[in-house]
Length: 161
Picture 1 (cartoon, rainbow, N blue to C red):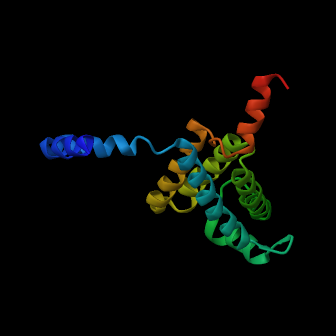
Picture 2 (picture 1 turned 30 degrees about the horizontal axis):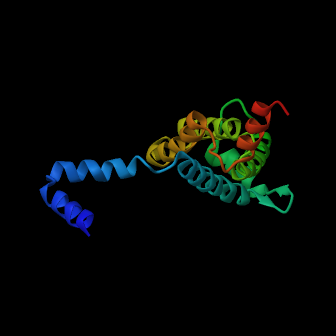
């Protein structure tokens, strides 16, 4: 009872900046594992969904190839090859991100794809691409977090197994 009264008295004496600082300190406690997991899952969904628009079953659609011929028009890459590489990448790397395997490599690959899209295809979409890049950089710089196969592999390697 005495402690509760002291806490109430102390809280009343706190200034606004002290309260704001306390709130900021709480935000510092958000674990990287949670941030990395959300980054991995959300950006994987964006690319997976884009990949789904390029395929019908196991085949890249004629429409996807047509888009690479007419709208995307990447320099130095045949549209048929570009459509197939994009469809593969937009399925393969998101799966790796979701399970947390080769996460940094997968994020780096999709960051590269994002840069190509930004530079050559949709340069005015930089706010969207910047958001994607931020998710990738969280994973590349900080790793995938503990909820990932990469973390389990690292633990095994540290133990010498």
